[in-house]
Each structure stands twice: as C-alpha cells, then as structure tokens.
Length: 288
Image (cartoon, rainbow, N blue to C red; front, top):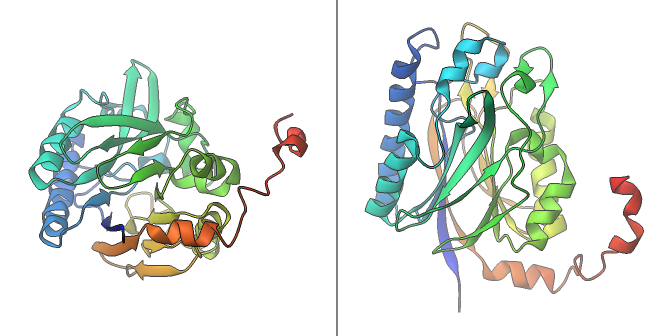
C-alpha cells in the first residue's frame, strides 16, 4: 500500500523594505507566506515548510541590536499561534522557522513544528551557527541549539528539521535518520558564489546516506541595504536515491509541490544497508 504525502516548500522574496519599521516588515512577510499557504491548501499539500527566518530579511548581514526586536516566544508568540490556527484550518502540517526568545538576551534560530490539527509538536533549534564574512554574522544573534535532533511524528509523516548551515555537517543528518525521520526539511538563506555549487550536492548526499527525503528551501533575490549577494532560490525535493524530483526557479517567489512516496524509503534501505553496516564502535575519534 502506497504512502504518498503531498509536500510543499515556500521560497520568498522580501515583501517590504528592510528599512521599514520591523512590525511592518513582519506583517508583509507573514501576509505573503499566508497567501502561499492558501495556494498550497488548494493544491492539497499536507506538509509545508517555509524559509529560514521567514518573517523578515536575512538581517544577519549586519550586526545591529535593533534586530533583536524580531524575536518571539515559541510556541506562545503571535506568529506560532497564528500558524496553529492556519494548520488546523487546512489540516496541514507546518514547519515555521522564526527568531525565538527563550529569555531576554537568549535567542535561537528556531523552527516550530505544528501538526495538522494545530497542535504544537515541538521545535528544533539550529545547532551550527556560522560567523562567516562578509555578511553571515549569526553568532551575534543566535545561541547554538540545545534541542538535540528531534523527529516529529505528524499526522502524515515523521519529519526532522535541519537549518541552513547545519547542512554542512553530516553528523546531525545521520542522527535524524537514526531517529526515524522520513522527510528532513532544511530552511535556508544562502547566496550565489558562496555555496551554490554545494546546494545540489550536500543534501542529496544526506538523503542517500540516510535513506530519506529532503526538502531544501532557499530565499530569493537581493536584500538591500546589505546586498551581500543573490539568494538564488532553487528550492527542491530530493528522494532517498538523491534524485531531485521537483525544483523551483532561482529568481521568483514560488511554491514547490511534490508527492513523496514514503514506501521508497524501505525499498532503498533494503538495497543499501548503510544503517546495518555502520561501525559506531570505531567512530570515537569523531567526538574527541
């Protein structure tokens, strides 16, 4: 019996100038994404993920404390509460990447996972925090994540989350596979010239090594006043064989939809026995 889950990704250009009041930026970006969620519902999407820090610009291009005001509580902040209502309305699982405040001065790059009945299932906090110049000053904004690598049992599939720079580290991708993830979402903000040559290499490799589907999301366009480069879109789904099965353009806001047959996971893993043939007894040096 097939287990086909219709999934979606939203890649989005900045919907308002980054020099506007922060509340206006957030309202515009949430509004744009809600429009895409409505489109996804019309297409029968069951699981949907948005891009990294979806309700604002990629403000890590500079180091300015004004952006601390973008934080919200998770799950008690207004954006997650709104998304819980929307998830329930459409019977849709939502992965919602936001800027989270745990306590004053302790902030995380976080993705909330909301089940199809609107239940908040939990969150993943980005583990690997880059400080790569010019333009990726994330240690100024985020504390390294402390959630481990959870897998969320949603109505439609068991899903994991890895955020942007995390994708360069195979260890967490493996942990998600061992914890039972069937689909791993990687909401990102990455620019041409820096990592584009890796975009369609690393995540299909994770899919192959761990035998699961990956949904990779990038934002689109350039964002003034920083103009650190072109966010090149090209969001995609790949299958456990590492094949890209649906992909967006590089230059426009877009909804990507794909039907993922989760039975393929078993089929692939019964050929490539990577989990069976692991040798964790010989890997101690990796964590010394």
